[in-house]
Amino acid sequence: MNRKNEIWVFGDYRNYFQNRVTLQLIGRAVELAKEIKATVCAVVMGHDLDEWIGEYMAHGARRVYVVEDPSLKEYDAETYAHLTARLAAAHSPEILLVGATSFGREFAPRVAKRLNTGLTADCVGLAINSDGLLVQTAPSFGGNLLADIVTPQQRPQMATVRPGIFKEIPHNYEAKGEVIRIPLPKDIPARRIRLIKSVRQTQKPQKIEDAAIVICSGRGIGTQKKFNSLYELAELTDAEVGATRPLVYAGWADHEDLVGQAGKNIRPKILFSFGVSGAIQHTAAISGAEFIIAVNKNPQAPMMKMADVAICADAGQVCAALIRELKKRIR
Amino acid sequence: MELVVCIKQVPMVSELPWDPATGTLKRELAEGMMNPACRHALEAALQLKARQGGRITAVTMGPPMAEEVLRQALALGADEGLLLSDPAMAGADTFITSRILAKAVKQCRPDFDLILCGCYTSDSETAQVGPQLAEELDLPSAAFVEEIDMKKNRLIVSRFSDGFIETLEMKLPGLVTVSTQCYTPRYFSLAGIEAAFPDGAPIRTVRAGDLGLDPESIGVHASPTRILKVYAAGADKENIVLRGAPKQIVDHLLNRFGDRIGGAMGKDIKKNRN
Ligand SMILES: Cc1cc2nc3c(=O)[nH]c(=O)nc-3n(C[C@H](O)[C@H](O)[C@H](O)COP(=O)(O)OP(=O)(O)OC[C@H]3O[C@@H](n4cnc5c(N)ncnc54)[C@H](O)[C@@H]3O)c2cc1C
Image (cartoon, rainbow over all chains, first blue to last red; front, side):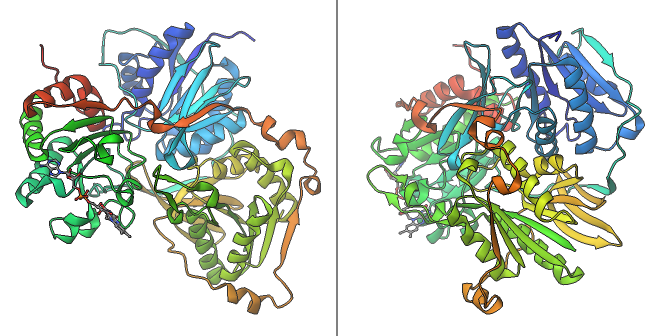
């Protein structure tokens, strides 16, 4: 078969302003493409797509496959999977990456099944190994372990990735690329699901379990005033504030905010931990945190041992310095 | 309605004893329980059955001890259990699992109206089996649904999807995966099952051969993916220690990890030129 050696990124644009996972995947694909000398392509379907075609090119796609038709206006996992699988069968991409959005998590497994290929869900890392295979790193066994997974034979190699794992490339509206328009096939199966209503969800208050950044405080923060200043840091970083049991018992924090065996499990991308000793009843619930920055006066505290960055200092002072510095630096 | 609920047995991690020396879970001591999302799916099926009438078949694939979750399903109100158990099925990934489930449903409940699955399992969280089962059986599907109802011969479901609340109408037969937000599961007493089934629980064990499945097509080898290695998530942690004046520490932190922190926030954090 005539392989053009392409990496495809599925263009999921529905909730673009909250969720730029497609651009993030294109950003990563550009890096991967260098190693296997591939072309980064976006695949996009729907109606009135020019805006997205432009965005994907500006952010690094060199070729965009487009299926545009008024009948595709509403997202439909089955129809989109049908079209994507046909396109992939015709063009044989090496790799197909999909954002792990609500839609992507239903769509990607269907595409993989149709193409008889493997799919790794919720990857936290993607790399090319010495055999030129895509190494898909995903959490396994409840998040305590990571697994490196490959798809040796079948193509494309498929992975879904949550928003926020990779970084998008800054846009360049001068960037040029090729647009390949594919007419809607005539024999496309009729939709078996009809969208009756779709209402934009009113922004629900973020929950600590879902937050990308959590600031967790323990008794070592010292005073209630200093504890309250963590909310200012949280505001700056779009974070949620959690607490250990002593602070909940003290009434500084609500039971809702308790992180641990008796409270919430969290899996943020970044966990700031201020003045927490790291008792197992607490740490059991933070094993899913991807990157931990702990502040504690005692370098021997278990929390410091499990941190990526262990800051040996006074919790209140580091919090104040972070607030000052972030105010200057956040764009 | 002819309802099929797919259920998985998972380890009861939150109840696991700790190893105080290492602070890790003693996973080998794990007891099995019904995957939480599957309990929600079963609850959704029970409520549908209460309104529409019909029959619920609970299906699980797993080792012989997985029969336990079928007994629970029966105690809760399912009518029959189907245990797909065969050494040849061990190690199946989502790709193979959906193939086996599809075969079993086709053979044992070909006249089903609706298949309900949990939206994901607590031990692997791939959320793939539902959609792939729909693909195997050529069904319409809706993943992560919150509410299910029937209107004439159509299923009406609603769900949260990427910032939208969607209401969808689906032709049957079809498949849904049920989220853990709604359908709070009822409690069960295992005593209930003896009362309901005095002649023994109606659970049928099905082997690969009964389904006409070639062991080659369902074993670990049939999976398109290979695991290269498994390692502790923290093993590659550098455990960088920072000391000094708070301002210095924060500068160091933001210059080195500002991208990462900013990435999680979706904002840019400037680096200091120094
Ligand atoms: C059945 C059971 C369930 C439990 N469930 C939970 C739970 O869900 N969640 C939970 O959090 N706990 C829970 N606990 C309690 C848990 O065992 C710990 O007691 C608790 O987590 C300790 O909280 P801490 O780290 O804030 O306090 P401490 O253990 O007192 O630690 C305070 C830390 O702050 C440091 N420190 C002191 N001063 C400073 C300073 N100026 N600057 C920086 N650092 C400083 C100290 O070095 C110390 O490491 C549970 C306990 C039991 C028995």
